[in-house]
Amino acid sequence: MEITVTDNNSREFLASELPLVLDFWATWCGPCRQIAPSLAELAEEYDGRVIVGKCNIEEAVDLTDEYGIMSVPTVLFIKNGQIVDKFVGSMSKAAIKEKFEKLL
Image (cartoon, rainbow, N blue to C red; front, side, top):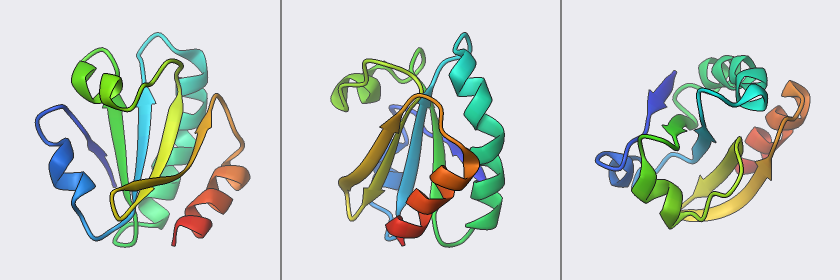
């Protein structure tokens, strides 16, 4: 299941014992719409093992600034509060799944 991450609730998810995949996106972004179905499917597949968060850059300005997000989509892979991997732009579902596996 995907969750919406905002400036107000981000600390809750960053402090979780579960790894976090954080997708910074925007409504006007074509590549964001391109990877969204893959992330949604992986969120279901890894439910209970990985938290998949969606962060709209236009609504979560503080979090976007905190992570220095300059392009969307940017997907961060966070474990124990630390960024351990990331990608910017579009990527195949298989390649994203490999990153999920490495996160575990």
